[in-house]
View 1 (spheres, rainbow, N blue to C red):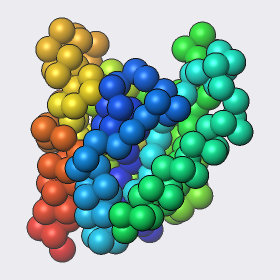
View 2: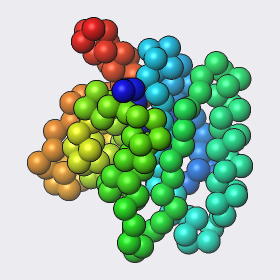
View 3: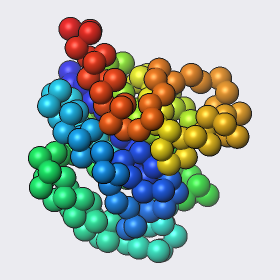
View 4: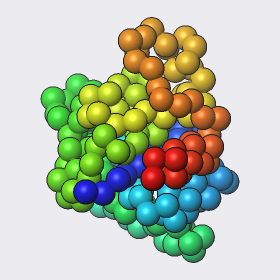
Length: 186
């Protein structure tokens, strides 16, 4: 079975937390983090909520075009995402894929034969990303970028019973910690 690093998009790899993929741009250190995950032999998988699709602000085809642009940008820097999983639903929709629901991770597990207890979820929200990590049995890494500081402060009550395995200043520090933990476990 394979090991994976599930990466939140906005607030973790770039952007400003609650923006959408159309305005998204990578943090300067995100490509290095992804390249580090790639070189460690782990899958790099994006899991993202994109409710703007269901709200009609852009289409699924617009989303796919933007994903292709991001993949091309990463490829030019020697990095790659193995897969993008997207929930297009809003919080009012009833679905099994919108984080913190496990649908996207469970689909990736099936698609790639992923060992979830040996995998990681990296994100900037405790109530969504850290809660999801605990639900599916992955290790949880919270980044302080995006909504991360708020998750640790005024919104900590939303996930008070969950402790991340590591709190990183950003996704590059998270990737370094993950790679180090992987080397230590071998």
